[in-house]
Length: 246
Image: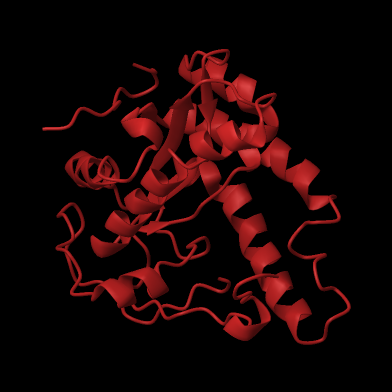
């Protein structure tokens, strides 16, 4: 069996489109959903407004998802990843406070979701919904029952882009695999990075060795209020496709 870092508190869309209410009793693990690979890949949405804060997530389900995450590719087979899972209420409160301080900075950036495409009558309403749901998650982050922080060995801000790409490419696929596995088990997740405005403070809270390890994200995990996600509206492939050159 693969080993994962799972020591609580220690280191070792955009509107969510949902319509079906789960019938599994509280406290019982959700069976895997009957999703084809294509359906899984196209319906794993960022869930913010519809996370059920009152329903606990079973540790064994998180462990299953992390076991799957460890099958992701990793540069040079180094497997320098770690996953800090936080369920302690006081630490989630502290992480939520850090996240809200980061969100206050993010909200004022030109790249904030609500400001992107502000002059585009088609995109502006969508981006505003994204921003509204992000505001909601920030306000309630501490209530989400599980926080998962994927990490990778090393600090690499000053490294050449090739080495940075290899290191990020060794933790981001595993994190996405975790989120896909969570979706397959009826869980909702959202990829967030805003707490990284205060990464060192989060490291101190969770005893992560900041000078040796880089945090990649903070993934809130909870059962959603509904299961029927649908593919998101995306710009046409032709507008993004460059074949044999830009």
